[in-house]
Length: 211
Image 1 (cartoon, rainbow, N blue to C red):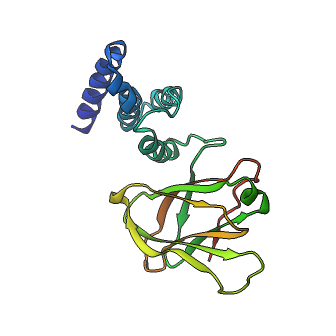
Image 2 (image 1 turned 180 degrees about the vertical axis):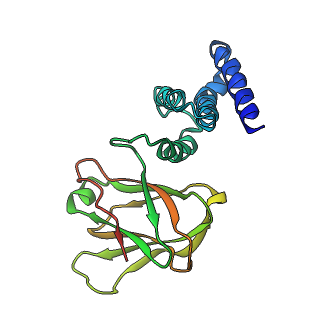
């Protein structure tokens, strides 16, 4: 029965893809074709047609990012790629597993250069299932210990709420700390997909530390 639904989904996706040249501006701005390709990739994956699924995901990438559903698709495609075993060299999202009873901390240095160019640190993330708590804080340069400013208090967010995005304007040097906490969970590991973008010329995103 599941195989039959997948076959029907692929047929309907192909019908939609054949109408690409007839799409109006609003459908193109939404990203209807990339969405159809993603749905087709899911259906092909469920039927065990992994090469077809990978090919459809590659076609999605060819549509760039200038459409409304891009961010939603980027998260979904990260999960599907992982399931297919597709390695995402230089992929935009980092997929991490936060074990039960632990937290993941990403400490982003805010340099003098980032302040001088008036840049910002941007991020968006989502948890695949259940929930994880998130906190954002900032430590001024030269300060130590617990002397931090909490910018976003620790708050639970579920996978059903979708991606959370935000930014920090670099107006003074220091360290920006993003924390995903799963210490409230006794058994379940939570999977989080996160993307952090630094100001141009300000280095790369550091590694995530688990505490």
